[in-house]
Each structure stands twice: as structure tokens, then as C-alpha cells.
Length: 456
Image (cartoon, rainbow, N blue to C red; front, side, top):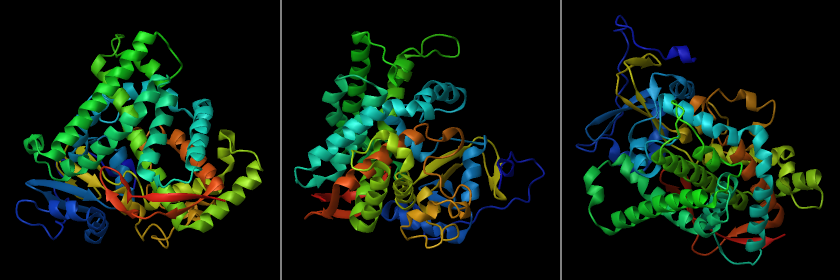
């Protein structure tokens, strides 16, 4: 399957098929009730009905794509843009002028602005900050207290993103507020996507009030961050400086709303996804103590007896494979949507202009057609000689094409470093009250993971 397989529909292609309709819909809600009740199982089962399947979400028809070659083609084709229920639900959080939600020329210009901060040769400059935050984490955990892994993971991911990309001491005082606001917002976003009740989410019931307070606080925090940087007069070599000095296509400074939305896009998706993966990694280290042993052995061979440093990360191949395998089985980003901008076709099926398309990295990355022992945790499947057997686009945790996450190298370095350091320092066991079942929101993560970090 290539990009050429997805192309605008010529008039004579009337023989294209209508995708099959998934069973199990109910009046009014359609398939929305199944998607809301048990979305992971529902999306995984769709592959049994075909590579492209029609769903009904309320009165709307949505197309689900299940085959990896078609999800790749969908992401790479200009016939589809970032849009649909997921992105519409996120616009109140991320705005319409940030790189995460924009399309076309605006998105291309914004990518050019943010990409230099995430070039492979730019990542080592963030090493000292990543090291400092990671070793501070270990020092704090050594006190023997029960770890609220949700709070700890979000905290370190927010602090690393903020300190690397928007340097300044003013971030220290705000990191806890940002963490709290994001936890509330992402908990409520998924329901707004699958059950789009519009104005009813403004009814002043407690859940809506809490959500709206967190949203207002996050946007207020962003305005404070930008204002503090302007007042300081400082221009460190970071992403916030690049945004404040960025020009639009006419050579004028970009607008305040775009700066605001870009800062939200810097703080929010990266911190949420990295934090969610870190929670899953800590669960993996708890459930698979043999992986702790293997990581420790690798660290000992690479590092010796000194502390793990950022420069060691590229040599810690098994540790990186533990991160990759965790992202395969427990991807933070588990559902994505696109919208057709023209009458087109996908896998021999007719896709009308304006149609929304949904696909699930979670379902694709657990597909037994692509992975042997697909539910087994096996970091060695990513070793040279084995990883080549994985079909193209069957494993794309950072996306593909021009929508690929620009911070992929940044995130892999951060997660590999943290995994190596904490596995070298601790073993983990569940604490009373821990609930490792999957929390399903905009991202996937353990529901309420409480751990004890045991030295040794």
C-alpha cells in the first residue's frame, strides 16, 4: 500500500464499494455506547469486519480503518486532514492556531518554527536538565513514601518539557498547577469526543464546573508564562523565544492568539503523552522484574558504577526497546481521527468528502496479523533481525508524515533516561489501594497506580 493507493475519486470509479456497517448499534447513540463503554475491545474487534468499517456515532456516519497499511496511507495522503471529533473536542484546550490542530500552510509554517528545537543535534543540549530532573526524582522517591505515580509522572514530564523548551525559573512555581489542570482536562476530554452533547457540557454540574475551572486556569497560566518572558527581556535559545520572534508569511510577527495556542501545544500533548507512557513503564517494571534485572545489567555494562548520564542513552538499547514495547502494548495515543477533504477512496472503499475517519494505534499495534504473540511483552522483538518482520505502519507511536510528533527524539531520550535511572535505583511493588486497570481518556494510562520504590 502506498500513498498513491489513496487518491481523489474519478467520476468513472462508481464500482467502489461501500464499507460494511459494524453490528451492535442502538437507536440514537448508534455505536457510541460501545465506544464509550469498552472502546479498546470495540476498536480491536472491528478488524474482524474489514479493513474499513462504517460506524454510527449518534446521527453521524464515521469510518474506522483497521489495517496498518491503510492507516499509514490515511496519514500520508493530502486527501485527509487533521479534524473530526477528537480534534474538535481538543480545540477548547489546544486552540485552533497551534501546531497540533492546524492544517495546510499554517501547519507547515508552524512546523518550520518548532522543528529546530527538536532536531536530533539539538537534543543533547537538553541533557543536563533531563539528568537533573531524573536524579531529583530518584532522590525524592528514596524517602520510602508511597508513590502516587500519576502525580509523579505528570510532574516530571511537565517540568522537563517546560524547563527545556521554555527556560526560566517562573516555570518552577507553576509546574504543579499545570500538572493539576492537565489531569482534570484530559480526564474529561474523552467523553466530550464520543458523546458530543455540545451545550449540555456548559450546564453547571460539578463535573463541568471542575473541567471549566481547570481549562481557565491552564489558559491563565500560559498567559502568565508569555507575559513573564516578555517582561524579563531575556531571549534564551529555546522554543518560546522562537515563537515570540516568529514571522508569518507576510513577514509580520505572529499574533498573540497563535503564540498562546503554540505554548499550550508545547506544554499539553507532550507532557500528557510522556507522562502517560512513564506511568505504563513503571507498571511494566513492577509486573516484569526480569526486565529490571536486564536493564540493570545493561546499565552496569555501559555506565559502570557512576550515575547514568544523558550521553549514555544512545547505548542503552535494551532499555530503549523496553520503552518501545511499552508504547506498543500501552500506547498513550490510542485513537486518532482525520477528515476527508474530497471524494476519495481508501482500500477500494468509497470515502465521501467531509467524512470523519477514526483509527486506533492500540488496536493496530496489538493485531495478531502483524505481531507474533501479540499480547506478550517482548522487548527483543525490536532487535535487528526481528524488527524487520513488523509490517510498515504497524508500529508508529509518534505518527507518520507531516503529522509525526516533532518531539519523538526528545521523548525517547527522556523516557529511556528515566527508565534506566529508576530501574537502576529501585524495584517496585504495588501499594494498598493501587488500581492498575487501564484508565481510558484522551490518553491511556493506569487508573490509579500506587507503588513503593524499594532500594536495591
